[in-house]
Every structure is written in C-alpha cells, then in structure tokens.
Amino acid sequence: MSPPDTTTETTAPQTGGWLWGPYAPLAGLVALITLVLDQANKLWMLLVYEIEDRGRVVVTPFLDFVYVLNTGVSYSMFDSDSYSWQLGLAAFALVASLAMWVWLCRAGESRLMAWGLGLIIGGAIGNAIDRLWLGGVADFYSLHAFGFYWYVFNIADVAIVAGVVALLYDSFIPSRKDAAKTS
Image 1: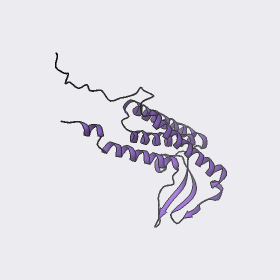
Image 2: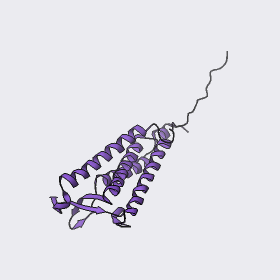
Image 3: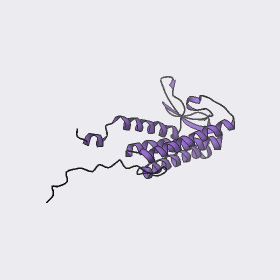
Image 4: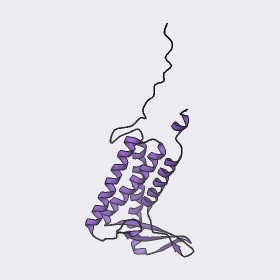
C-alpha cells in the first residue's frame, strides 16, 4: 500500500483570451448601461429639453443646467474646434477603451475591477460619440457653492471618475486570495 499523496495542486489564476474573459460579461453590461444612459440623457437635454436655447437654468442653489461644448480634453485643455482634432480624440478614446477591455479580459481579478473598467469604457465611448456627432463633448451639469464653480460635466464624466475611484480602491484592498495563502 502506498502512502497518500500529500502534495497540493496549485492552479494559475483563471485568465481569458484577448477579447473575452471571466469578467467580460459584467464589464460589458456596465459599459453598455453607462453608454445608453449617457447618450439618452444627452439626446434628451439637446433635443427635448433644448438646453442650448435656455441658457443657464438654476435647478438648486448649488446645481445649474447649462450647455457647454467641450472641444478640448479635461477642463478644456488642448481646446481646438478642428474636426480632425475631434476625430483624433475620439480615436484615442476608442483605442484606450480597447486596451482597458483587453486588460480586463487578460488579467481581470475582481468584480470591482470589472465595474470600474466598465464605467470608464462606457463613459469614454459616450464622450467619443459626442466628438463625432457634435464636434466636442456635450456637458450640462454645473455644481457650485460659495462662489466656486466646478467644471461643467455630463453622465459619462461621472462614470469615468467613479470607475477610476473603483480601480484605485480595488488596487489598495488586499485580495482575499492573498489573505488565504499561508506562509
């Protein structure tokens, strides 16, 4: 009779292919919902509410609706009315979104990472569509308090910021897999 096998088999973390992985369905759903909400809101604000014709609309003491076409990047840096510049920025957003998708599929480790990347991808694609359709990103929401006005933003911007916060949080919390390892 032979002694029982006491070796333990370790398996590598499950990773996916280049374009599909274990967290791809969740991230894809989050990106799609983000994109649809962002574009529906922009269509409603522009075509139904007609925010361009209304000017600044005071909603609360700290929130206004106002239409701003951002032809630059964050905080209107590198501002340019050139459509070729808008095409370049849209192309960059799409390439960056593809890179984040591949990263998720190849190395995704958590649902939080999938949520974060899904929010960023959905927001980036939403703003890229604006650049192609409008020649810049449509922003509507202006927060302010005590004479300080924050930049004007849209739903895609909120999703991108929330996605970055989720990724930062995910990178700093210890993994349950690491905690389960014994030394």
